[in-house]
Amino acid sequence: MLSLSKHEGCRNLQSASISERRQVMIGKLNHVAIAVPDLKAAAALYSGALGATVSAPVDQPAHGVTVVFVTLPNTKIELLQPLGEASPIAAFLERNPAGGIHHVCYEVEDILAARDRLKESGARVLGDGEPKIGAHDKPVLFLHPKDFCGTLIELEQA
Image (cartoon, rainbow, N blue to C red; front, side, top):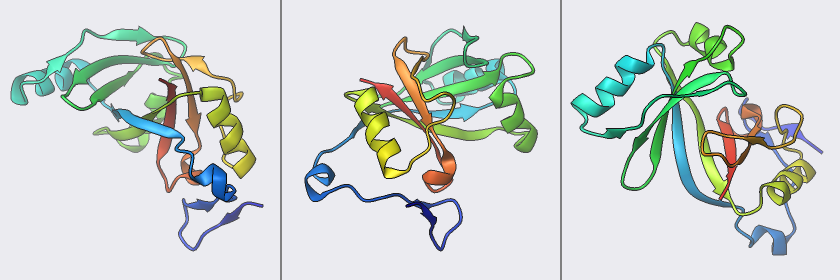
């Protein structure tokens, strides 16, 4: 049974059995996504001021975003700009006009097994619960931020 903890935004999910707890579900941090009001300016900031390698912009109509990836030695930064008025990033930027961290993405070996295990523990998978193809042409799912201490979590098939 789900219940809110003392701290709003962190839910108590059902604990897995001891044998399941020993199995690591998430892998490496794939990327941290930052919503930005001006993708061109943000890309120039990362490449110019920070000297990072920045990809070309790619439209992701299924997700309502245009993205660029900033390559780092140990992970990536995904800069997101709304693509269309119905974009979930547009709503985020209305609440955070300067932009900000939108989500973190972890890799998983088996996205369907991860989804099923999380749902059994009481976590909420956003959308219809079925993986969609993400910016890396791999299946992705998003988990409700209220189940993970206010952080929107993206899972990506490794």
